[in-house]
Structures are given as C-alpha cells and as structure tokens.
Image: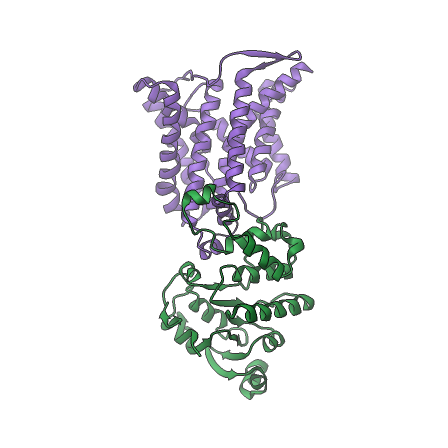
Length: 292
Length: 247
C-alpha cells in the first residue's frame, strides 16, 4: 500500500507536468486551430535557456529561471505565432502541422549542435529532502512539483474563468466571427494563448528537467505524453487536459512498477487507442465544440 | 421624420450573378421595417452589404446621415448597429448572462481593468434587465449551448439589444422557432421597440410573422424592390403574389 501511494504521488507529480504541456497544446488548438507537434521541444528548450544563462552568462539559478520564462514567451510564444503560425494557418491545418514537425526537428538538432548532445544536470527549485508521512516516503521535490504545477493550473483557470480577458478568450475560441463583430480584439486574444502556452511550457521544463536531466531529445517523450494527455482528456477542454495529464503520469508510473518497465511507454498508447475506439471525444471532451 | 438608415443604390455582383441590383430605401426612427422576398431574391446579400460583411459593388449606406460604407462590422457595432444571425451565433459554453455581458461591448476600457476589474464589467445589471425582459430568468446561469433552439433565438435577440443600439438588423429571427416561442418573440420585439424607440430592420421568410411585426414592408425579387408599403397593401399586391407563387 505504501509503495502504491508513493507511486501514485510521484505519478501525479509527473502527470501535473504533462498536464501543463497538454493544457498549452489544447489552448493553441482552441483559439487558433494550431496542432503543435513541436510541443515536446517547447518543453525541452526553456531548460536550455536557463542553462545558457547560468553557464555562459554566470547568472544565478533564480534569475536564469526568469530569463528562461521571458525567452520562452518571446521565442515560443511571439515568434512562433508571427513567423510560423500566422503565415501558414491560411493554408489550412495540415501545412501547419507539418511545419511544426519540421520545427521540432530544428529545435532538437539546434540544441544538440549549439549546446550539447549530452544530458545536462539541472538544478531543482526544491531542497532534496524526503519526508515520511504515515510510513509513506514522500520527496519534497515531488510535493513541490505538484504544488507549483497545480498553482499554475489554478492561476490559469482563474484567468480564463474569472477575468474579462479570460471570457473574451473563451468567446474567441467558441465563435471568433461573432467575437470579432462584438469588438473583441480576437488577434490579441490569440496572441495571449501563444504567450500562455510558452509560459506553461517553460514551467513544465523547469519542473521536469531536474528529474529527467535536460537533454535535446527530451521533447520526443514529452510531446507524446502531452499529445496523448490532450486526446485522452478531451481535446477541446482545458480540464480534460489536466485529467489526461494526471492520468498518463499515474498510469505510466504504475505500469512501470506493476506491469513491466519495458512496456511502460506502451501503456499510455494503449490508453490512447482505447479512448479513440470507445470515447473519441475524450474523457471530458464534447463533440465538435471549442472552449478554453 | 429623420432617416436612421439610408440605403442608396446598393448593388452586389458575384462574377456574373447580380444578387442585388440597385436597391434604395430609408428606415425612420422607431420604425420596424420588414424585408421579404423569395429564396435567392438577394435579402441576405443586401443585409451583409449594409452590415459591412460584404463590400457592395456600388452604392452607399448612411447612418444618421453619415456615410458608413466600407466600415467593418466591428466598427458598425461600435456605432450602435447590432444584428442577429440567421444561423445561431451564441457562445455555447458561456452562460446566458455572460453572453449578454460580452454583447454589451465589455471590451471597452483599459487592459488592466479587463484583468482585475469587475467580472461583469459594470454590465451585470443591464444583462439582468435583458434576461428579465426576454423572460430567460430561469436560464440565466445555464450554458447557452444547452438551451433549446427557440431559447437561443431569444438570447440572440437579447444580445442584439445589450449595447443600447440605434439600429438592429434581425436576420430571420423566426427561422426554426416553434409557434409558442414565435408569439413570445414577436411580442417582446414589439415591446422593446416601444420602450427604446430603437429602429429595426427584419429579414424574414415567415410572412405571418413579418406582417404582424412590421409597420412597413419591402419586397425584393431578383435583387430589386418590387413592392413597398404597409403589410396589408403588400399582401394584396399582384406583383408580390406572382413573385411568391412563381411565374
């Protein structure tokens, strides 16, 4: 039982990080029909922004984290929208999908060439302490990841659900034509989602890199996890992406312990196949509707 | 009487198809003008030209004497021209009340205000009044997507009045609405017209609805006005009967 609880907590911690990436993935789809197959690389890259700030510029970790978030907003938010999405979305969804696949290769190989092909140790935000709660060993880092990830999700939900800008972003996702007629600045709302996605990716990157180390190829598994989480939860719901992310994290962890480590990566894919077969709109998704 | 809307010689062609061919009319303050015509007579094209959603091939649209040709729909919205849609256009996953607040031009104001200001943007009371007026009180906090078609039509109409419009263009408000709801919609539209003196232009297929709602009617056929006048006179006009019953 104690083992199970430990696995559950560490699974939730990883799952919360997947959820951050999956939420961003969903948001981009909702407001701009962008399916970002470079999402995994978007989570890989910010750790390297931080590493560059620390090792090349000699800045402290806390400053490096801020720089990583700001650089992500500029490069993965603003530049991604203006240089890649804006010109290509007019050609339809498929050319954009293929371009994001190309972008993922570019980012991955770019990091390998410019920084390093080796996995890099990455500092953690939390002290390396293990607590024992009722016989269950819980690492403070895992609790910290859960708290920060959930804090981010709660802040995002507040922003989308309780502010006027959030409501206008929802209106943009649900009916851009009418939103535009009513005077909602639709283009700016779409830009906000790209910036939010970049911040979520940066948060995920800073939380997951101490666990997996920062490596150019990290995006492959992270991107897949985010994609599967978004589909499993329901592609058109932010809360679906949260549930999907947590579920993938937990299932992945439990499968490694109780099924087989060699099949652990297959288990989320089996889940994906099952969901597509039996509940194609996802666990919480709705058919043919969009919302943020 | 002052003309709120003046349409001057509007024409619109799509390639070789002349959908609207030189249509002119005025709409006066507080009037409810109906535009009817058989399918393909150019009603929707004319509407879209007035609303800035299509650029007319020629002609001019004036609001309160001011030329607004070429303005975008959002600019016209700011000038006090609202519209409803033939195919429903509510925000399905926002509540009825939130739909109304959005329609009340809540985007006005500073960015900081939109982030930290009151969630209802000071439009909550107006939204509640509109909810009461259109008798949607029991549905105020339901998602619009969950409402029946007729209820959504009522919401759509209510949204058009949220910004205190000068002119409201209603595109087939009766389409697909059941008879009970239709009576309620007509009665509410007449009531709000009396109360606010807002001017309406209504495009509609449902003859009975238009005849009962409007004070004056224009009949379009093949992109031209073939008849104009009071409902009873239009109904008897042989040209109208011919256009509707076929050649």
